Structure formats: structure tokens, C-alpha cells
Length: 101
Image (cartoon, rainbow, N blue to C red; front, side, top):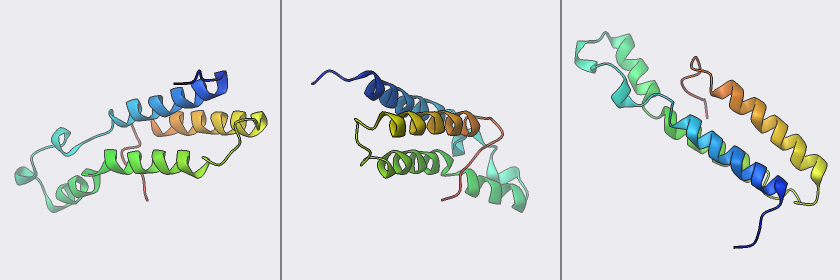
């Protein structure tokens, strides 16, 4: 494999950080037993059921959307890295449990 430039390593690092944070999001197994819950709680479980998958799809789509940015366009790559770090910081908050598609 060819050696990666500093910016390429940063992009790869951001991608990995995103997927590490996604693993911290709730799954069906981390939610209470649906048999002992009200109908609103069951709806919440259905909503959170695919939270990790929704975050995965969103992260992949964001990276694919910018796949055509030239690796020599340093200003654009650095801007997208800053934007990605801000989004990661926001979405890694424990209060955000799912993302809309």
C-alpha cells in the first residue's frame, strides 16, 4: 500500500473516530424489555432499533459525498476535516441517540 500523506491520515483517522463513536450509540439490546413497557416506550425502542445503522449510513454518505474532492485541494480538505470534527463532536453527545435519514 502506498504511503499516505498527512491529510489522508487525518481523514482516515476521522473516519475511524466516527465509527468508534457509532459503537457507543444505543442498540436494541441496551434498551429495556418491551414486554414491561407502555406503548410509547415500545415506539421508542422501534425508533432506536436502528440507531447505529442510521449513524453508519450517515457517516458513509458524508464521506462518499466528498469523495471527488482533489487530494491536492488542501483548503477544501482542511475545511471538510474541521466540519467533520465539529459534526463528530456534536453527534457523539450522549443526548443524541439517533439521526434522521
